[in-house]
Amino acid sequence: MKAVVQRVLEASVTVNGERVSQVGPGLLVLLGVGKGDTEADVAWMAEKLATLRIFEDAAGKMNLSLEDTSRQLIVVSQFTLYGDARKGRRPSFIDAMEPAGAKALYERVCEVLRARGLTVGTGIFAADMKVALVNDGPVTILLESPGSGAAPTPR
Image (spheres, one colour):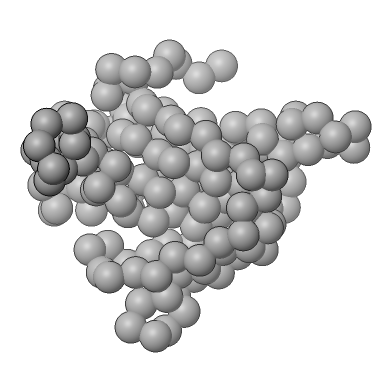
């Protein structure tokens, strides 16, 4: 699994002119599901998103997580994170999971985050979404679950 995590002052998702999600201060997460991702990747990603310390404490240090604050997040499915443009001019999405499996794992990440007590907004899987945000900082973090072969186990 891959994620682009952006600390935001506000973010929203609109589909067909209708706002489907909106948050104040929190996170906007673009989440891609790759071939071979499993429930272990879901658990890793949800844990990392809930506990990633990228919000400032009273001393101005990035020391607080979503779980430490009353902030919210929007998780948007984003298969294009698996686009490989190293060859040619058109990205290949061969490493992205097929839609039915990707939707199930994407929804599962959102479920696990909600079970942790977090408020989770979403986009609409496979829809043409308009995503708006005001990045705070800006702070943008790239995450890859261990199943994608890139990241260590969270502490």
